[in-house]
Image (tube, rainbow, N blue to C red):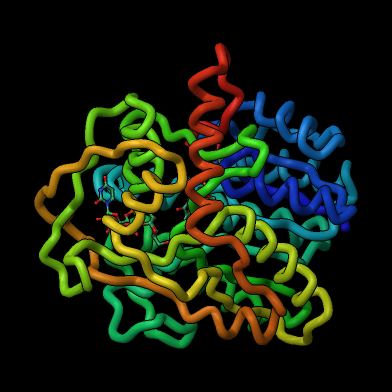
Length: 343
Ligand code: NAD
Ligand code: UFG
């Protein structure tokens, strides 16, 4: 298939581009580079041996999207483009509604104009809000606890209405749990601007000495060791999940389907710290700090629906997550001009 990846230069988009190119799909990335660098395309060429086109554009610019889809005869879209920082969303909600919600509306309009009705959407486990039971399955009630989560929920609802109005749509809503890790080459990965919000990039930077110590946000949760438990999924597994979803919706009769992409296995913050130290032979100094507002004790997926319907399940464990992240961190440290994804 000829597939447009909005946000294709970003962390998950670039890894999915690799997976799609490796299986013979033609990939075109469309990205405004607000949280990524054009140089990632060079890394993708090194990894895949193929030159993947990048169109620098904004999804809120419908004309530019239509031109991209027409000139590349696009048949399906995987929609990664969006802003994703919870703290920023609380402080500046309007840019989240504008970028994520309006951007998706503009994308849908452009797709309709170009008669493209196959879409995979990057949603998030954040739509489950405070877990009412675990593991979280796809029928768990949804709610939003912050404006970022609300944009994901609004988009999911918008897509449901669109699919109800026109059953020719084939839409996959993928709810990611906690994506971590990097491509095995260490050439692409996640390198957030500023101080990382997420645990694993923070651990990586402490291990390399770029940051002094990790603050563990709370050790008094109702979990085995008191620290927060999450479902960490290797970004390469996540990328494979997109391929599986695309294959499934292309042959399914349902206009819209939702799948969790997680492992079903929860690990605590301290388990992640120890795994990173053990796998990479490094030291990650940490201190126990106050709980972070808005955090839940535990959050992990039921991956059963994805396994049954997509024939997909995560294959890579903690060891691959930790070692690939460290390889990418070393690449950043040794490279004079890091060609990594800035996320
Ligand atoms: P990322 O920031 O690395 O990638 C997003 C890409 O979209 C970036 O390259 C950015 O430049 C681009 N972009 C943003 N706004 C755009 C716009 N208006 N027009 C064109 N391009 C635009 O983030 P990621 O981690 O790869 O996340 C991809 C998607 O997955 C996002 O929608 C995110 O909300 C979702 N998601 C991510 C996580 C996570 O922890 N990484 C978890 C759940 C869901
Ligand atoms: N944590 C620390 N110290 C840190 C960072 C995180 O102790 O410096 C802890 C958190 O308290 C939590 C765990 O590590 O217990 C994971 O935190 P992350 O910030 O890495 O991930 P979250 O589960 O909070 O959220 C992530 C994304 C959200 C997304 C959600 C579900 O940031 O956008 O996964 O997909 F919605």
